[in-house]
Amino acid sequence: MKAIDLLKKDHDTVKKMFAAFEKMGSHAQKDRLAQAEEICEELRIHAAIEEEIFYPAVKSVRDKEAKFDVEEALEEHKQMKSAMEDALKDEGQEPAFAAKMKVLKENVEHHAGEEEKEIFKVARKLGDDRLEELGQQLQERKEALQAEDTGNHRQGTTKA
Image 1: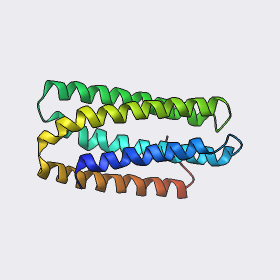
Image 2 (image 1 turned 90 degrees about the horizontal axis):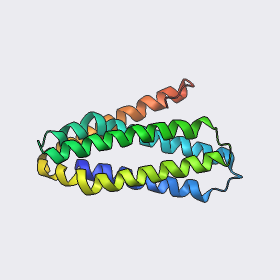
Image 3 (image 1 turned 30 degrees about the vertical axis):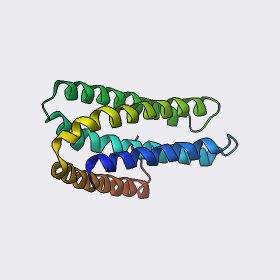
Image 4 (image 1 turned 90 degrees about the vertical axis):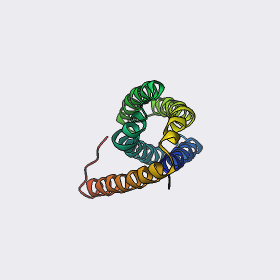
């Protein structure tokens, strides 16, 4: 799978996760918190593979616009990480929890939209072979991070 296809699939998965979160009523506090934690973990892994593998490859295109777009995306990642930490620290206490999750969702949707429109356009200049290679690297790193997370949960620890 090409890198941009894998990342787009991740974006779609997170959108569905947010939709499921929103369908849960505020009375389902434990379920909503569990869903929020899953969303944040998915976002943490997604951001990590973009920052470690995808963005450096996009920057290698040597396009002034690409460098700016990647720097902007990195700043958006910082904002999202902060919003995730802020949302989870409330441990599902309403109404702040729902408001913070809504802001996180809006940040994620904005970021994903810009990335798909601008960064993916630049990434296509890398060519199909390179995008396939990057897709494989992203998938392998994603699986390693997921396995790491599973190990942390078994030990009773989590990373935010």
